[in-house]
Length: 222
Length: 222
DNA sequence: TCACGATGGATTGTATACGATCAGTGATGA
DNA sequence: TCATCACTGATCGTATACAATCCATCGTGA
Image (cartoon, rainbow over all chains, first blue to last red; front, side, top):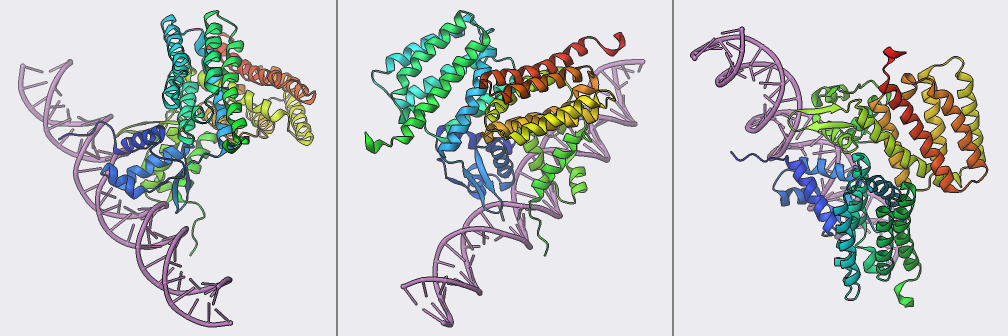
């Protein structure tokens, strides 16, 4: 008989995670165990486990006897998540800098060039996808799996609580591309690791600040 | 009827976490759902959820159809966990430095003085407890709850995978006390945050290095 | 009209039951 | 003697059932 290679609870987890990452599950959305179980054609028990795992990662909040809701786009939460990611990703990028293969640096440069080109005919979604990939290349060689894990969780969490900074602050894209090149130059020139770390951290903090400034000046003022 | 304020799965989680933190559950120990359920006087379902959460935090490993085992004292794992904690705790300490009340700094100084006194009649367990408390004072005012959470998880994880560095490298205690004072001086003098961050990070990395050096020179050589 | 309490549906929390899977043990045959 | 295989006990994975709890709605009385 065809036995599933992975458990149902695992599949439920993957399922929900993907929905969160791709935005089908908008913040504030309520996760009802029974419904999810129906969609996955299983009972609620595996779904419960999956939801618990998501809770442990801070992607959803859970209230006893009430259920889970997708974490909302709270500005404060956004701030904290971005700040945390700036610290972790900065460290990960620095740790990876010394051992990243030249081929991958080249790939990152190429990607950034594509991002620069796309500025002319700007599509936030597309740009965001390339941006995510760009940073993934840089930090993915981090030799510390624990840090790597935290970075990836950070990105997932970020993606789950907001669409994308570039949707709301398109002008940030220009600065971002320039900072990417600067970062690559630092890595290429074997700059001290703390310099690379600071650059990577500041890059993220700059994005955060761009977002916060935009929040203070609502669109109505434009 | 007396209704439990918290769910059983929550209680199971707390129960296991405490056992891990206080070392009743030694690395390599096998967690059998049924046994734990018996101890807690409940069915296995809540226990499963708790174990899943522990797995999501990396405190136990889980194998399908086999069960959970407490993460072992792998030197490499230890290295990665400490390195991660150095990054996160450094950031947390720096972020907290600007807003920590004078009373708490005084409490930290007092605690460190007690640690210095205890060096004469050294008890690793007692020293470790004070050390944990000392650092908790410094980082607990970190305004970013997300980072704070990661620091605390890091400590729990560290405690769960090894007894204490000071058990194995007692001489590190002397340096540690001195570094604590230096760190407090930096905070007191309102040093730049990145200086404080670096000091806190190095403090932890020094402990890590002390541990690693001792590993390379097994006790038999003493 | 408004405040307040009862009621019912929806949802979660947990126990129990049973099939699936794994690891160890002893028997069998070369 | 040794490799192989069937068997068994332990444990996990999941479905189902039911109790506990919450939330919204409606009715009642002032």
